[in-house]
Image (cartoon, rainbow, N blue to C red; front, side, top):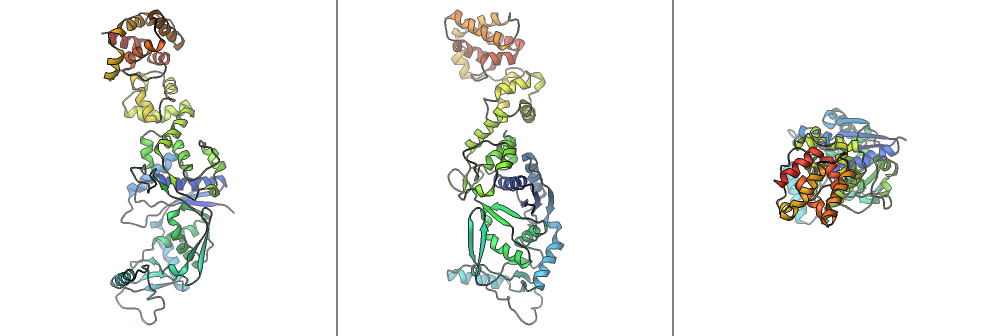
Length: 462
């Protein structure tokens, strides 16, 4: 059997991290087992679905690198197929027309709530005989089996038992003929050969309804795995303030897609104590049976840590590619600074995001436009002038401008003044970078180059 999974977002908003994790788990499971990953857009909610949201979902999937084998399918282009399934259910007695007015249903609901009963349809039209009421456009309801239980064999939660008596006859087609969510999902999963449904456990209560429709259409159940939700660090439902934003916002904030995927995979899934995985390793090791039953907790600091691990380990060429849009946004021309490979190698251990890496690299380009006033007061007082003069005189006669020679100059000036290396390096760093934080002073001077270093020293002395 070929394993087929699916990711079916509704285009009513961007692709957020919860949806991205669902897509990832389905993608990983299909890839691990040599199966197929289906991508479909559930856009039947015409009032809330937008093209902008569709575009945002595609953009997020592309950035994450989650490719699909089949699709994208759009539910709005499959209405004929849904109508065919509804007719079949009507013809086989698995569904029926319901002519109840909105007023009757509202009265029924109010009565049930006053009696502290669960609001549900009472089956008024289930076995209606005689001619249909004139001038009423009926809905179509699925004839839910009465009595007994339905057991959902879930790969995460185990067997989950539902009483059929708790389920009413849900609407599968509105009065205008348009199909509803549960019907379209089931028909899509049948037609697309879905073998494994991996989704958030907020859909677990929907599952018995969908199984009834599935079996009403004569199809076999897929394997279900309902993944616990992601909460914020305070244990409450994940919201924007916790980080439930578009995955493309993480892109814009300087996260690598491979780092975000690694972090999302570890939200609710584990493989021993391992934290960092390449995508190939995730494909080899991921299994739904290792998904935790309890809700995961989103931690922004942990995500930053994971991203930092990737910044330290990816190739320099990858860093050059990934930082390009950030250099452009900061109006920094790489051709007007030091060798970009050498610069990013020096910065990779000092930043947690690509954006931070580029911001820390600003002093290596153009004029020194920003100076830290506190650093100036602390490190460039009158006592620093003799040191800067000695450094200027020694540096301008350096033969080979490399970090070994430059370290020797700083060390010699410190020895001549009878002070520690750091007492010379820090005033020098402030003079040439405008702040107290940069790579090692010899690396910093090598990256700045002779001309820029001497010009900035001269400006500091002035």
